[in-house]
Length: 73
Image (cartoon, helix red, strand yellow):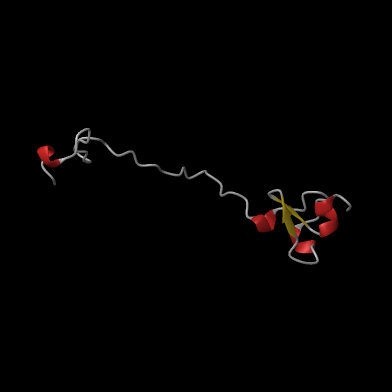
């Protein structure tokens, strides 16, 4: 550890002994966020497993086709 006098002005020694560290825990009843594979089409609601291809992402939403993404489906 550097000596106090060797630290630049305005900087002080910080250690785990002087400042407690808060540990964060996930509660056991927490549920994981949704997987994108579980999300249906944002326009028509078709389940992901029924899509003909990989779909299309537009404006942070997933669509089953280009037609749905453009609002034509």
